Amino acid sequence: LVRSSESRAQQFSTSASVRLQRMVWGGDAASSEGGAWGPPMTLLTIDAIVQVVTGLAALHSPCALAAVISVLWLPYAYSYIHGVDIWHLAPGSEDWNLLFIKWIIVNAAAAMPILLLTALQLGPKLVNGVAFLLNIILAGNILWTLAVDEEDTIAKLNAVQAVMLTISLALQVFTLWCRGDPLAEMSSDGKVVYFYTTSTLWVVSYTIWNFVFASAGGLEGSSQVLYYLCFMAFLAHATGNAKSFGFYFGFTRSITLGMHLSVKSSAGLFPYFVDGPQDPPLDQYWFILFTVYANLLLTCVIIGFDLERLWGARHDKSPAELTGLSDILSALLVSAAFKRPPPPPPHMGNTIAWSMLRSSEADSAAYEAIWIHVGGLGEAEMDVGERGE
Image (cartoon, rainbow, N blue to C red; front, top):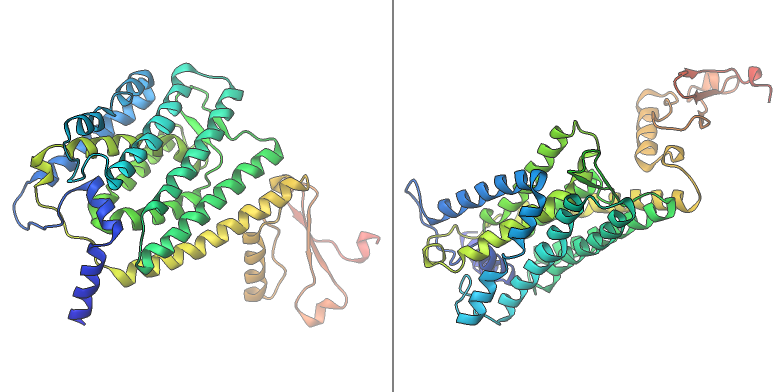
């Protein structure tokens, strides 16, 4: 078992995923135990402080933050002109190019347009136009991970997860189009943009997928996951939970990831960080594999919900008129457990009737229970004879 574990750890540590994580999060995977401080702690502390300042600037000085982001490509220019490696990546090499492309996708194509939306207070049409482009950028950022050539089972399954997340995102965009609903909307104070294409369930699945990918080279790589979750929670609290939690994702993700990537890339030019000790790759194969399988199942359910909503949009059904897969499952469970007809789902429309024969054999021949949910009037049971039909 020990030899098997060591062999698996050695194979995983030399995979392309770990190479990619090292080029973004740190240098060699040599661990250094003991001590109260070190280069990794310095870098993590700087990164955390930058994230706090970035969050405040995004809300109160979006123009200033956009100006700062516009010059954060300079470390790459310095690396290329002077031939200086970034995290041991030679300028112009395949991995160096992948890192620079990542910076362009996250910062230039996503973070800056979002900040300009709030800074310039653009109208609804322009907000929706930019939101459409940002959904394409989000899909591209997810599919960018497929450029990492993987050989282990976890990475291959996680790549399938990336494709499924992209499909779900496309279904959400198409559904909102069919309904004529906006893809995004500015908050009343003009400080936050709500993106309606990322449900809370989708964000949960995305977070698990991203954690598996980012933590391949060590838990330090997953710190960027905590940043956008904390920023989302802060915005939800600051706005009084005005919108669903997942709708804060689009505004927070690109800004936090962009600054995180810029800090890490800049640090990769300094030997203090590059040659410092790093945590070894995370070797939790079976637990992570189970997590990936569970997340694939969750994404299948999410895509099922997406297809249901798309079907409703194509057939002119409002969200309130769709019973929903989750409601059907709940109804079946309640009926099986309590041997009686379940009440209607709480979100059903004013004219939707939910009927089911009583499961009791003594009553089923003479009585049918029909539950009618009418706005705020409550529920009523009516005898078959009293219905007049």
